[in-house]
Amino acid sequence: MNKFDKIREKIKGPAFAIITPFTEGGKYVDWQAVEEYVKFLYDGGAKVFYVMAYNSRFSLLSDFEIMTLNEVVVKTVKSFNDDECVTIVADPLHCSTETTINFAKHAELIGADVISLIFRERVYFDDQVYNHFKEVSDNCNVGILIHEMPLTNGIPGQSKTIDWSLDLLDRIADLENVIAIKEDAKKDEYTKQVSDLLCDRLAVITSGYGMKQWSKFAPNAHAWLSGSGGFNPAIEVDWHAAWKRGDLDKCNEIIDNVEIPFGEIAKTFGWHLGIKTAMDIMGVMNRVERMPLQQLPDESFNRLKEMMYAIAAKSDYLKKIRR
Image (cartoon, rainbow, N blue to C red; front, top):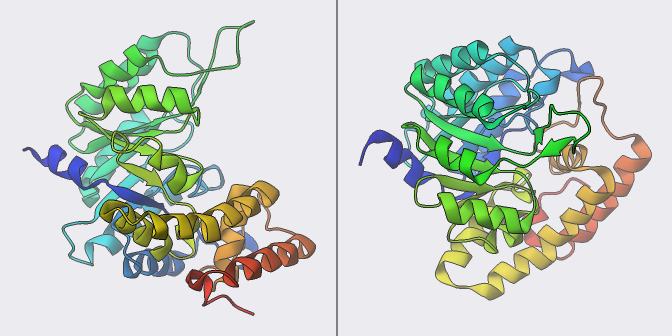
C-alpha cells in the first residue's frame, strides 16, 4: 500500500469543513481563531479537516490568505501528532493551471495530505478538464481531490451548467495521485453512479443534506461534508460511531432532533450564514463576515437563535448554547 492509498483509507465519516473567522469589521482573517477552531474540532473527535473553497470563504480571500489558511490548518493539525488525521487544503476558486500547481506544490511543502482542486473555468470539451488535472498531477507529489460540481458550459444556446461525464471522472481517477472526490452535484441518481464507479479507487465524500443523505450511498460513499458538526463535532462523530455499530435508534435520534431541525435553519437563512450564526450562538466563533458577504441582521439573528433554543430543548448536543 503506497502513501496515497494510506491517506485514502483514512478519509471516512465526517469531513469537517473549516469556516473562516474574521476580526471585527471583516478586515483581517482571525488566525488565532482559525487555530482555536481546528483544536475545537479535534477535541470533539474530528479526524478529517477540509479547507473547502466555499465554506472557507475563498471568494472573500486573497490568494495569499488562502495559502496562509491552508498552512495554518495543516500546522495546527500536525501539532496533534495523530496519525489518524487527514488534512485537505484547496486551490482558489478561479485561477490558471499554473496557479493551481503553485498551490499544490505549497500543499506538498507544508505537509498537507491532499489538495482539493475545483474547476470553475468555462468548459468546451472534456479534455480541457482532464488536461488541467493531469498537468497538476504531473507536477506535484500530494494527494488530489476532485471537487466535482456542475461545470459552467462554454457552448452558447445550451444548458448553462453540465455534469461531469462519467468517462471524464473515470479517466481522472486513474491519475496516480488522485485519491478522492467531493461529489457536489446533489443529484441522487448521479451521486450513486459516481460513487459506484469510483468507490474502489477514490474516497468519495458526499456533499449537502448531511448524515442521512450520506447513508443512502454508503458504503460506496466513504465520507460526507460536515453540517451541524460545525458547531459541535460530537454530533456527527457520535452518529458515525452509532452507524458503524448498527445502533439505528441513536442515528435516528440525532437526525430527528438535530440534523433535520438544523436543516430548517439552513433552508431559512442559507447554509453559510446559518452555520456561522449557529457557531456564534454556541460560543464557537463570532459571526462576523467580510463584505460583500454580511452577517444576518439582528431580527434574523434572533429568529435563528430561537430555532436553536428549540433544538437545544430536545438535544444535549446543544447544552452549551449561550442564553
